[in-house]
Image (tube, rainbow, N blue to C red):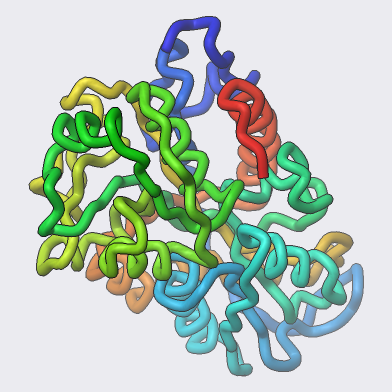
Length: 344
């Protein structure tokens, strides 16, 4: 894709994509980077603002996609570590629908006490561009990004195509159904961008999360799925899936035998990331306590072990850096939606 295809957002000239330098010719770069790790704190009586103690009761973390996907699994790891570092219980609920907008909107509309938190991803930067929901980066209080996930395309291991070239040959003569985690989701965008770069037409089929999209591919309901590489690592390693390639600039530890798309002639690096957020209008003292707890969670041995054992990258952005990142991604996805003519 040439320089004038989709211009990078204003912040991209200084930002990094998955920790690497930005190539402005490669406009389908996605997401990621690393942030500074702040020192951990502990909760207790707060000063100023709301003058209340956080947390004073159960904390609910809303995962806007179905159980089994990356958002759900990592949110449960955060909740487990959060519960170990506070005096209250943490619960994860799955509120799916609208490419994640149902669950995220529930958190954005919750009372700003800090006892309802949510998981967000690139979709928060897409809803308004696609008309899915009136929800964007300005409607939440960012807390922390903690991971990023390059995209991968997977097929059934007994498919007639086991390489990108074989798949493209098939797709040019057949209607291909590509499963994703919802129209307007980050995996839908990754799949659409990949198909554009590959020069093929596909039928995008939406599911309420990565896990059901993967299951649909395993069961033969869809020809392939575009999801996070880490979300399919075990099924690629042990069956019943084959990964055609990862949309990253180097091979991944989670899929060590899977080539990059770049090495197969499709120059694309794109994926997703996950972060937690609170409702808007959160009192400053409550926000400070939540951020301190999340710093402790991020550095906890239980969270580190979970992330390492499940091949999730640990990538951190604190509230201010995350807000800036969200604003940059909002502009980027607006350009991508227009260029690829994506419609919800």
